Image 1 (cartoon, rainbow, N blue to C red):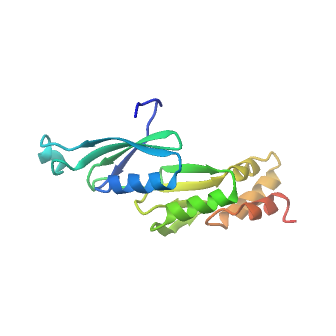
Image 2: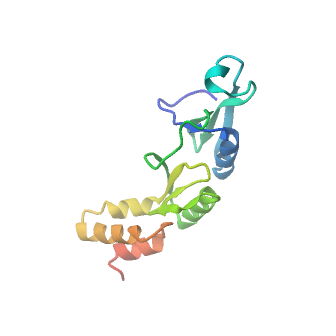
Image 3: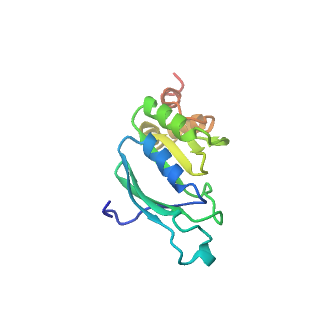
Length: 167
């Protein structure tokens, strides 16, 4: 896989990079796994990984390149960074919510955010909701925000009802 984008998200996993990449590429239809590098003997006293263990995996989801690293347990994901999945339909929202949330933390779900089983945060976002939140009528955008704040998985019908004034 040739690097074609200027910035590539680099995801640090303790030891589950291969499993996580297989999980993500199974969910996103336009995805592929690229180059896989392995730890050698060099630096074992620093990283502690066995020679032959996967070091990095290049992969692509919906045309966006990522790199996954088996870096050990020193760092974990937190909500300070998340990946947004822009969805055109409620069916897409439902699909990504179910698939990415499988085995994740149900307590971390709010306002379209979820945490997957590896601790990575995702925002499953209907593009229509973003447009409604950006409505120039402040009263309308406030109603939409109030509706969203009550949800875990975003429901476009409820958001649209709030946008229309509850009718």
